[in-house]
Image (cartoon, rainbow, N blue to C red; front, side, top):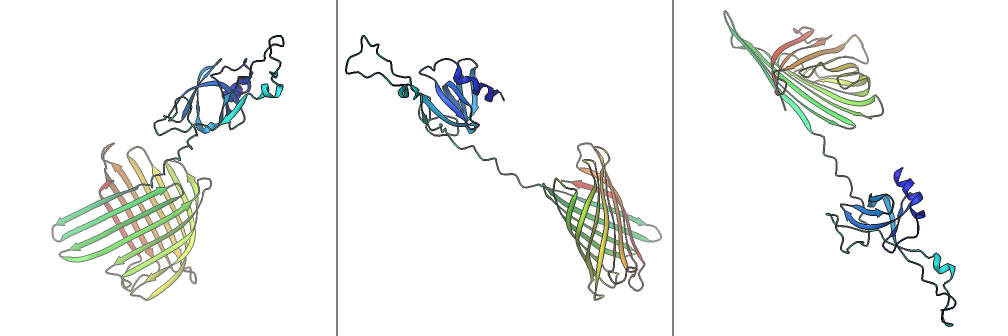
Length: 343
């Protein structure tokens, strides 16, 4: 607004001096001022009223030198062969010249006025979104009438970009009693979300892989895709509803079960040290809704210090299978308390 006002009155301030140039801005405003130098892509002007002014080259369309009209010799002293300057000659006050170009340090090859303007430098390329993650461990052991050992290892990775988010987590359980393995179970979960900053809707693709030594299927893979809606989307609290479809493939059982999926996920930053993440899902078979898989997981973390990368992790996970393997139970319940290192 200031440049526009100056540009409107600048050319009206008296007759230009021989040191002044006519600066035309892209918006159409004009300034009569002396160019005294350039500095890092900035043209430095000396205005007769407003003093020193600094204008970026990117705002300047052209700079023109001022031509002082030729003096008119009075009739009584004019030579008969000399012609009086016409009004057309007097009106030619300027000749456009290119706007200056400078090197990276803001200097020009020609003192005072360079020859062509340097294009505005492109913005630096956006850095790729960084990955964050964690690794954790929980170990319990007892040796009384029976010797029991329980181990849980976990890891996670996350990458958040302006329009997408990638999550991957894995957990492994190994339990034994008197030297006999009673649980050998691995669960991996991957999730990819695509979203817009202007909408609460998102598209997701996710998959869960599970290995269990003591289940008849041994390996189970469940990929899904669909739409999600961020019901709550605050900096410290998020709640997303999801709906979609996919299938569950059980290797050794030789089954492929087409399924629908309904899921709720939440993330709550309780304070600077505490956070809670949880999700609950149900995936009924398309041809028989009484057959379904349901999963509930909740993980609470509290940092061991405000700036510490270590945190205490306490959580539970339960997978309910309405049609379990022969000899297996409906529920596969896990609980843990361990230490997590974030990076």
